[in-house]
Image (cartoon, rainbow, N blue to C red; front, side):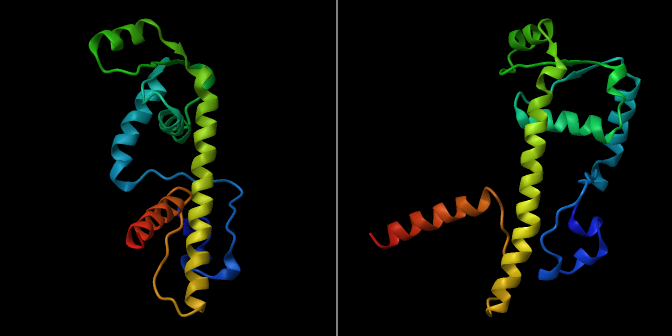
Length: 167
């Protein structure tokens, strides 16, 4: 959720409102995805066994577990299995279904991805208004987007461009 979903005071950027550290993070299903989410939510609630078949990585775990959390699934009443495959070849998929893993074994990967997701949010939602407002105080116009990955990556591109320019 954007900061204004936590408190209306965040609708306008102000240094006095920074840093933003919500006590509990809100995750919102986009309006364009609500219909599909509700279908998945109903199916998850009806199922006795849930097979997590998202991408075989932390982000895939984050997607699956975030959907289950947002759907308020009572996981104590469900059997969770994990399809872990690295190929979409028919043989690999069939082998994956024959060798389903315990879904809970991958819960730590979800926690790790969720922590990264929250740290990205904190950096972006605090860094972008901070830098923009400080730069404006010094007469620099514009809005400046700050991100955990994008900012150092853009700096690397800038450094390379400067090296080429000054060769």
